[in-house]
Length: 187
Image (tube, rainbow, N blue to C red; front, side, top):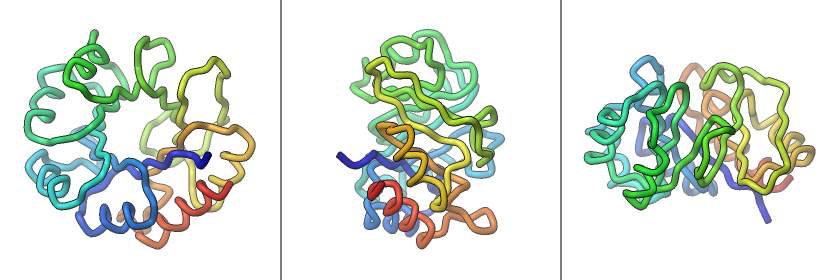
């Protein structure tokens, strides 16, 4: 079975369409205010409504009211939480019928655990490793079209998540997205 691929940091409908056409399984919208990939909820909603896909809202150091406010405006199917996550966020997300993607292994009840580098969104490679305990694991951090196939072959993650690894000059590049997806899924 091919690995799941999430393209994160989507800010334009055209890029979302290209990613879906190339075979992306999930698309991520970043709502962390300090991120260069941050998108306003109103703009995110416009893109989500224009491009049918499995959308994930990505937060860092957010409290539950901030998360809930975005979820009221943007129709996503999942929530990914980095940094300090509010207590009970996984149960709250599940209560809304959404997928929970945790970035801390000790968090219980998530649908997916994402292993990222020491600084999420930096694009820096790290010592990629995965536990083998029956959970669903995705890898992120420093993945590119040039290294994703090797990482998938060696570690066999359930999924991979990329943002800066498919950018040129700070913008998503549809050709890099397509190549990343092809490399990941063919590994």
